[in-house]
Image (cartoon, rainbow, N blue to C red; front, side, top):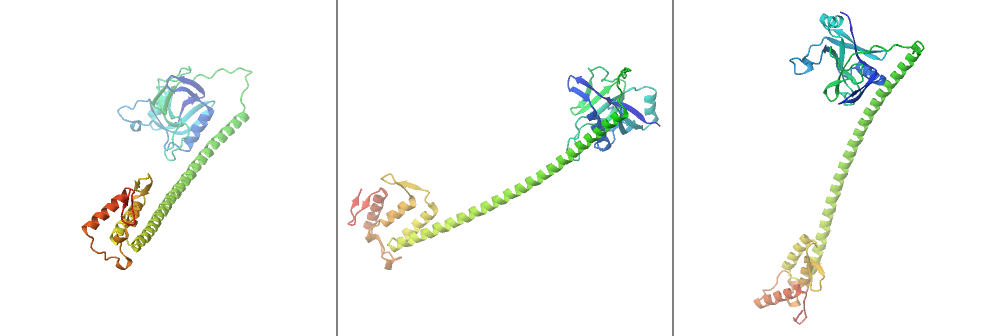
Length: 338
């Protein structure tokens, strides 16, 4: 069996009411050929009859009449060279039962292995007798997916060249080929640089996240240390103040209650005095205890062994505490001053 040489694209420009302007450019051809030869699709494109899936749910179950082995460009036309899988495929083309071709391609294919956009990639070629893209600018492009173009067209007869029209020599064609190869190499190098840059950025972000996490752990540790140090300092100050109050004869039981309040309150709860000054609850209680008259205090030698207080003394002591709470004072001779 021979090789099927199927024209499926040419240089030109068409307008479509849905997809807008479509162009067949030298750059596009070079990229499509380069992506094909690097096997970016991961499989060879195949040849089939039309775009009908038949009874199959996807094109993956449609019979392949041929497999594309190479893409070549000749005089501005892009061809697929395909090996037929059955003599019938060759007969279809030779007997002109199918005269035209329909190209299916992704204009900006995403590589499934790298996730990068790599430009145009041919996915399949269909043989058809109803081409939609003709020689006219108002060609029609069919698409089953937003990123999959199905282009049918009939190649136009090449225009007659004038005798005096300059022709492109082999040297000029060679220069264009070299420029095309250089551009394809540049695009490939750019893709490699982008991949390397993304990898480096991912590593930098990972290191930054680790450093931020470490800094947060250190900050939490230092904050805990500071709270513990502050609690020890407050406890030491409270113990010292309590010892001084006991030394001045304040009953140890009352001092112990004040101590618990002072340590738990830490100056957060405030009370307003008669002169509109605000002091902490612990400080207010401390001043009340220090204002106790001498007869209610315990000498140093009797600490912890306070004598029994009579009912009259309890009433007097309660009255003194109420006067002190209201901002009043008690004179040395026991008189209340408001």
